[in-house]
Length: 117
Image (cartoon, rainbow, N blue to C red; front, side, top):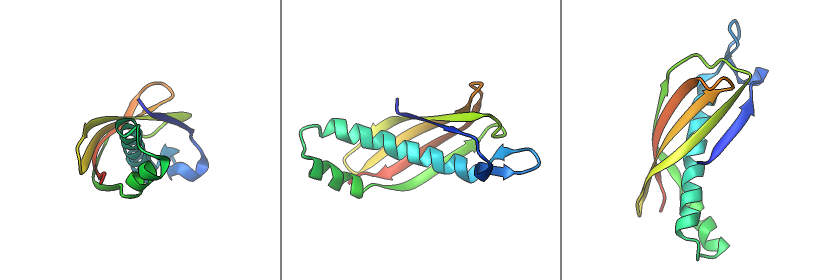
């Protein structure tokens, strides 16, 4: 599964009293990971295409639906997001995403749909 890890930093704080990760950072991370997972899947699916053809496919991608479930406060030294493609169709791709903290606690989940053509 594609994954990204990032350290907590002051610019990511949404609640300064508690030092929690901002919900917008959580949402943007999950959205980016869903899109990245689809880019990997598209690249694998069209492995015989030229780099220009693959980049043309990527340029057409866009989020059309995003749902984020905030399960716990975003507390941690660092966070890791993963994404899995649940469907890759001719026009639409769907993903499921997860965000955990450095202790392995599940902070948020997401699901999204993207235009892929």
